[in-house]
Amino acid sequence: MTIRKILTFPDPALRNVAKEVTEFDSELEKLADDLLETMYENNGIGLAAIQIGVLKRIIVADVSEEKNEPHIFVNPRIKVLDEKKKGGYDEGCLSIPGFYEEVVRPLKVEINFQNLEGKNKSLFPEGLLGVVVQHEADHLDGKLMVDYISSVKRQRIRSKLLKMKK
Ligand code: QAP
Ligand code: CO
Image (cartoon, rainbow, N blue to C red):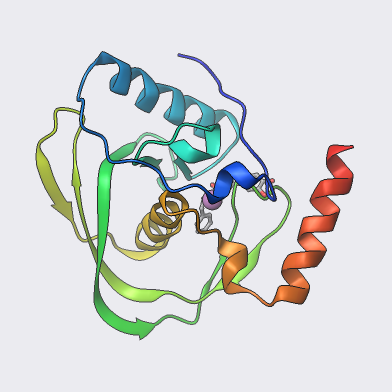
């Protein structure tokens, strides 16, 4: 159980593409544990391993009120079931602290993934969870929510976060 440091935009490490998980061992369990603890500690509802600098395809999420419904998705693959877009959620990101932007995404998705034992699973996430899994799966391919907004807004966020780091 370790709280890990979260990389912040525009750290170039967030632009890497994470690698498929092939070993379902105690190290992976420890990573999932750290991801959940780091997410909860920072009042997040989703976190991808790449955000703590680990290039493995694993994401975690918990959108419950009580923060007692942890989800762990290994090697997630998002399948769009309905291209129709929602009005758009105001999304946040632990790697872009203090900024919230409206992102329009497909309404209905299926997520195929493996659990910590390597067993194949699938889920049809509803509402906010559907948005969060799309956001977190994007991270594994080096994609960020700011890629969906105007470049003017993105540059503004970039320079503000760079100034905060100094
Ligand atoms: C992704 O992001 C998400 O700026 C997960 O100061 C969030 O957990 C997808 C957070 C909302 C869709 C909707 C952000 C916490 C948490 C901040 C998060 C902050 C403190 C972000
Ligand atoms: Co994020």
